[in-house]
Image (cartoon, rainbow, N blue to C red):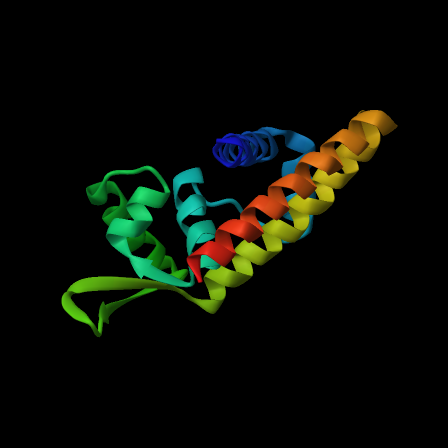
Length: 155
């Protein structure tokens, strides 16, 4: 149960950070200076999922990003047109399409992750007390351990 709470908290924090950082002017200016651009949040979530999964079916992607199959398929088509993903056929089931992230998609994801981590660390250092920073570090460590356990269970 604690894992589910931490995972839910992590998703909430990720969504809040993306909304916050995509809307505040100073961050947008810094992102533009760094050469970053923002995809629509729903497209960004698909790219972020595929950056970790590397390749998956549209059905699994839709479930992972909590969207309908129809909307996910439409968004994947748009990402494909932008060059962020490729669509192929599952060699085990020719009726199923497999979606794979491209290097352009990985570059987008990695540049945003690196920039976001720096922005988060700057915000933490500026706004949180030492005690709050320690507490946040404990939560991040707990989340990392839980995610590692989940990853081990998948193997």
